[in-house]
Length: 107
Image (cartoon, rainbow, N blue to C red; front, side):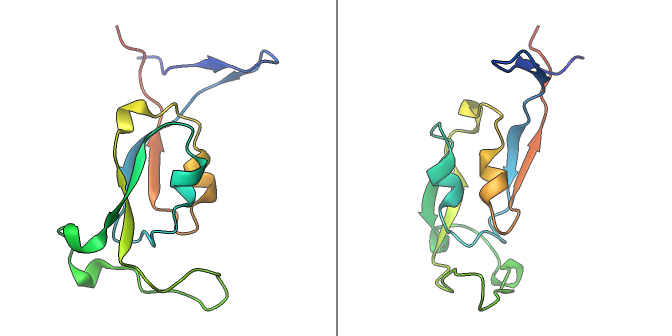
C-alpha cells in the first residue's frame, strides 16, 4: 500500500511519520514533546501510576544535560490517533523515546 503523502506550501512532497510508541522506561518526563506537539497527543502522568519495572528505568543521566533527576513524572500517549505526523516531538526528545512510522492510505 502507498503511504499517506503530504505536500508542502512550496509544492514539495513529504511522507508524514505518525507516532507508534513512547518508551516510558527511558522517558525523563521533561515535557518537551508535550510543549511542541500541535495536537493533544501527549499527557504527563505520575510514573508511580504505571506498571513499569524499576529495573527498566533509564538512570543514565549526565550532569550536563540540564534535566532534573526527579523522574516521578513521565509522558504518556493520550490520543495517538490525533498525531499529524510532523515528528516535532522526536526532534526535541533528549532521550529518543518516541517511535514513528509512515501509515498507509486508508481505503
